[in-house]
Length: 233
Ligand SMILES: [Zn+2]
Image 1 (tube, rainbow, N blue to C red):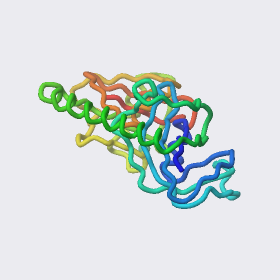
Image 2: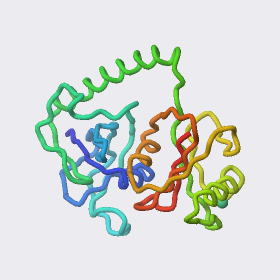
Image 3: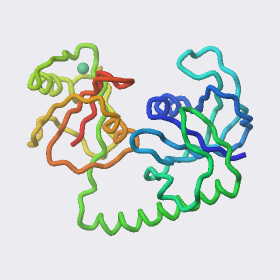
């Protein structure tokens, strides 16, 4: 069987780390079913495909997870996020909710994948043309400060504290998916701001490359990433 799986960014982080999909509702998921993953945030779209390795089963141990889980394999993420309106094939079932599976027929599934492949191909061609003269940009960096990090209401204190820990402290957790290292003392302006907008975390999670002149430290003040920083640079 083929399914569309709808997930929000908070759950996606957990799911991706432990290679499972979770849901509150029982669905007749079997081994080797194909799953098209639909990412739900303020910027919706299909992000990848995977296969199940077993049947959907009830889980009781982990209270963070929903009632039913299924293990996955062969997770392949698209190079971009594809909105339903970008895809030629129309999806009849409404895509709503969190951690839900929608059964779709094989033909629709294959057509969607094919549409996405065409878009990816087009994107690659455009990208190659663009890369000749355009800087490729940088993926935002994620930082989870250690417990010695002193948070302050004062912006310049926060910047100073950031410089003290970033790249120097062994306990702070940093994820930099670029081939380039960030040096906070580099000759670029450092800005600091606080936000609870998911788009900053989203850009990091989906490896969105951004082009910036300055470095901006975004302090996430709410949700799963509370107290963490996203650095756009
Ligand atoms: Zn630290």
